[in-house]
Length: 287
Image (cartoon, rainbow, N blue to C red; front, side, top):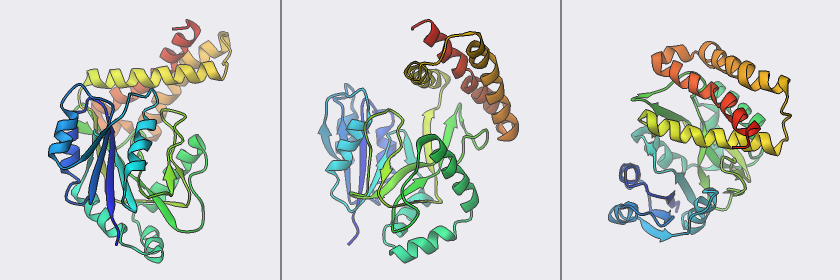
């Protein structure tokens, strides 16, 4: 019998945890929440919605807590979520179908996906950035799920924001987080497929929250510059202060059609492009 465990790591997520768990409680055989001693009502809300709640000290690399939640799951299939993600009804039904499929049925299902070409292209882009994902042969062990990202009241579709695939559904013992980096890719011991249904990502409903989250990405890029010992010279200054942001803005607005998302798409591309000069300035000023 296939058993599905839904697992989350949390820290002060009372704003999001309720809606996240309500979207999956009808498909989950168990819900596991590992909480980093939230000071709000996160743990109580999770308990009220039937979750098994555990506590864990705060880790700078949040993936450590995520992996501890994964380790506590008893199901042979695991759906790992962030509190600001919502499983759509279409995705919930698809998950229930997929976890019951045999290996042969999964192979046939993957070959029939209507967005297969787009998903394969996106997977290659992820692998170019993060390294090889899973294996080419064998059984399917994990699935990327496309996300739609909320930005200032609208779910973006263009500008490189979709399909934003994230590994969320996987077989127990066949995937894990290395816990070495904040934005590392999950290691999968088997083939990686795609789901067709969407996750809704509600992280950036207001601009202040977006700027705060974006600031974290800028600091990560600054650390990459530091670790790679990027030269602090005129050429690199021109590259990071001018060339890279202009290229990124035009790439996302024209090639990836960000303009079709209206003014929100323009704003998203603009601030996304600004991460290059902002990170470089922090790097050369040692901030």
